[in-house]
Amino acid sequence: MRCPFCAHDDTQVKDSRPTEDNASIRRRRQCSSCGARFTTFERVQLREVVVVKSGDRREPFDRLKLEQSIALASRKRGIDQERLDQLISGIQRQVETSGEAEVPSSRIGGMVMDGLRQIDSVAYIRFASVYRDFSEARDFEEFASTVQQAAKD
Image (tube, rainbow, N blue to C red; front, top):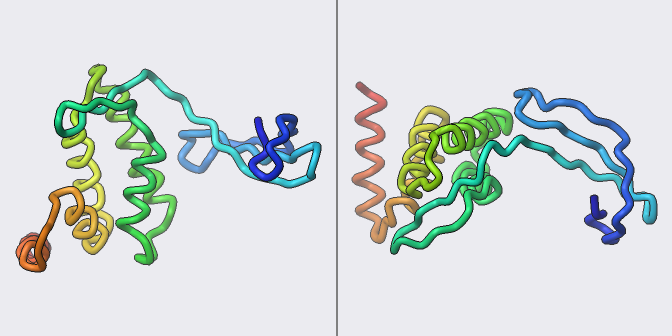
C-alpha cells in the first residue's frame, strides 16, 4: 500500500479489525519511510457492475462517488456517519447482488432517495434537488411541500 503522505510503497499494517457493520476491514498502517499513520478499508467486491448514465454513457460503479454525493446532501446535518455507511453499503450490496451487469443510474438514485427519506428530510431534499435537476425556487417549494405532506400522513 502506497503512503498517501510521501508516496513510499512500503507500509506496515499495525492493526486490523472489522468495521462495526462487518462490511469491511479497517486497517491502521504506518509508513516505514516517513512514519506517518493512516487508515485503509478493505471491502468485498462481488462483481463488476456498469452504471448506465443519461445519454447511454456507461461507467463502472464507484462506491466513492456514491459516498461523496450522500455526504454532500447530508453535510452539516448531524447524521451519524454509521447510518450513512449502512445506507451506502446497503445500496452497493443491492447493486452488486442484482444479477445485472448494467444498472441504470436512475435506479441507484432512487435507492439513495428512499434511504435518505428515512434518515433526514433535509438531506433528502438536497439530494433530490440535484437528482431531479431543480431549476427554480418553485421546484424546491413544491417538492418540500410533498415531503411535508408525506410526513403528516
